[in-house]
Amino acid sequence: MTKSFQIYMFHLGVRIVELLPRSMTILIAKILALIGFLVAKKSRQIVKKNLTYCNQTKFSYNTFKTISNYAVCLTDKLRIPIFDYEMLKKMVDVSGISNFDKALSLNRGVILITAHLGNWDLAGVYVSYLGYPLTAVVEEIPGLSDFYNFLRTRTGMETVFMREHDKMNDVLAKNRILVLLGDRDLTGRGIPVKFLSGEKKLPRGPATFALKYSVPILFGYFVLNDSQNKLYKVEISEPLFPENQSLEELTQLIASRLSDYVSKFPLQWFVFKDEWLN
Image (cartoon, rainbow, N blue to C red):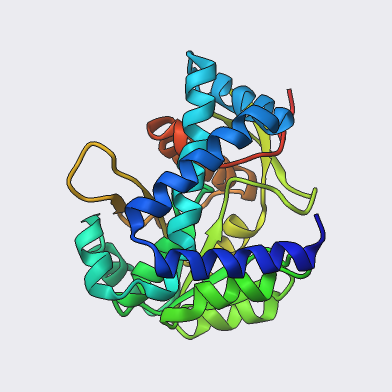
């Protein structure tokens, strides 16, 4: 599949979700997820391996449920252009948002660390709608970055690419919230940590910035909330203030916090590459 065709399909997806009610687009997403589950053998095997490290069983059902949840989140991501604050407010159960104010009051900038868990792009849109100054560090994907940023920046959220270190410094200097996905090492230069019941590498960036600039760290997630009236649940932790820790120690602490989140919502951890060290 060429990049130009992928871009065309994503834009087509946006047009479809604009025309159809959410219930219909979710049904279509789940049908496509079932097809993907049946034909995408490699992704199915990786999800199963991830679930093993989450101490899950019932692998066939849970693997399908993970892929189905991903399809639902992707569908809602495509709906970002038609979501407004009032719509999202009705959809989201909120906990801990005031911790942003607590951390920002120090005027050092804030690092928010999350994982590829639930609907992280929609999370950024929602938090920006609340009026918080958010800048997300994003992966540069040739041919697709412009489309993803078109969705992400609809509500004033800013983005910077992983290579733009000076811009990240400026984000913190301006007392903004720098959002980092901390559960995947995309550079190959990460730090080995214990994660869930296995070992993998996590990126150096979150701990490096926090230690260099004495920046408070928040952790958070934005996940599907099937058992409640609200469609999604967001939780933001109390600020963590790194002190007298090495880069390795703080990275392991980050790994432990993210592991706790993934353990709570293992069927919403959307990592489709085998990154385990053991």
